[in-house]
Amino acid sequence: MTEIKFWRGFFSILLVISLLFFIFHVWAVILPFAFGIIIAYLVNPLVDNLAAMGLKRSRVVLILYLILLGAGIMLAMTLIPSLIKEANAAVKELPAYTTAIDDLITKANGEIQKFIKPIFKSKSDVIAIPFAAQKFIDSLIPQLPQKILGVAHAGLWIIIIPFVSFFALSHGKSWIDIIFDSTPSEYVENLLGFMAELNATLGGYVRGLIIESLCVGLLTIAGLWAMGIKGAVLLGVITGLVNFVPFMAPLLGGGLALLTAYFQFKSFSVLVGIALLFIGVRLFDDFVLIPFVVGSSVHLHPVIMVFAILAGVEVAGFIGLVFAIPVAVVIKVFLSVALRHRKERLMFRHEHVYS
Amino acid sequence: MNLSFYRLIKKLFNDENHGEEMSFLRGVPIFFGLSSHQLGRIMQAIQKRKYYAGEILFQEGQIGKAVFIIKTGRVELVKNVPEGGEPRLLGNLGPGQIFGEMALLEHRPRTASARVVEDGEIFLLYTATLEALLKNHPAIGVKLMRNIAVMLSALLRRTNQELENQKKS
Image (tube, rainbow over the protein chains, first blue to last red):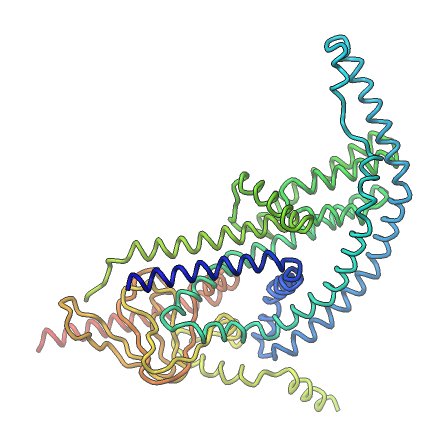
């Protein structure tokens, strides 16, 4: 019996390691499929709601997709031209911006030198801001062909993601039924209990997180647009995207908005206005969106957060940075549900009720 | 014209299985008094599985996490006795009957084992799924809890009656 247990455990571990190895190697291929399934998971409550009225699931999904496709095309028609226009304008103005930033840094370095030269004498040259915007941009240019290829790859994603999510939504329940039909009967209750707990904890959290990021992005676009900042849409989209990463939205989004506004207006009052806008959005996020929209008690330790972000960047670059925290939360909930199940089993292992 | 268009739309979108499953669930005591839409929501939360004779649904002592509703087939509930004797048969349940409902109220070990004695389909409703549903739709929760209270009260009455009968004999 013990030997059987050992070999079962050994092969289970071997299977998990092989699976992880496989995932690691085909990560780029798996990613659009994973996104498709995530989108299906997010839209599922809406489909469930309509199916609860007695409507055929496959037809509901088809109609929903036609509506979403229409809305997506409309959104793309309004947002993408603005984004392209703003990106083009940013590229055109880039040399002026880099020169201005380099001038600012040279000036700042000069001021620093004036102050520290009497103290550090000849060694004072070591202390300076080691950043040159032009050099940084020049280092990015050789990577451009690769980035363009990345965009072409993204074109394939636009086809794969809706395709996968459509089938996951319309056949989702029957796939789950197949899994349960092939699970030994005595494990069905535990397996489904485990999945139900994961779904109950994570479903609301992940959906809330996406709505939160969408609100933050839209509020930022509205605020920057009202102030007349160039590139409001681009800045809002960036702020919304990086909102998954703690403090990144005000730091990256706010930092870029401040730089843009400085070069556009050269006025201190606008900078204060932008700072107030980002503080306001942050407060709204903390006191309204998180408690009422996300509303979940899933928390991560800051050390885990930093580790998750670094690991995310290492594995999948920018996408890894954006999705590191949600993925870490999924892993945390998965582990805590598994541990709770084990604890319950141990707690009651001697308890049999005889009446 | 309008009527035939409506019929066409209804035919295109109407899920035939939905009505059949709903009329079955309407007859299950725990769902008494729920509206069609509320029952529809419960149906989305339910997991179905085919079972075959001899399969074990749960063992005595295992932590209860779901309530089981028999759609077709038969299930036997048996209880071990402390001295290690022959397990005692508590009941033989059939279509429309429900068991394991205490899992909805508490995370405690099962007090009996359940074994399939005739092939069939069983609906499983998980505590965690139900709790998430009740959080969003408390009206369903109020009706379900009332029905569970009625079922428990009936069970208590029956147990009292059995005790009285035992005392008399």
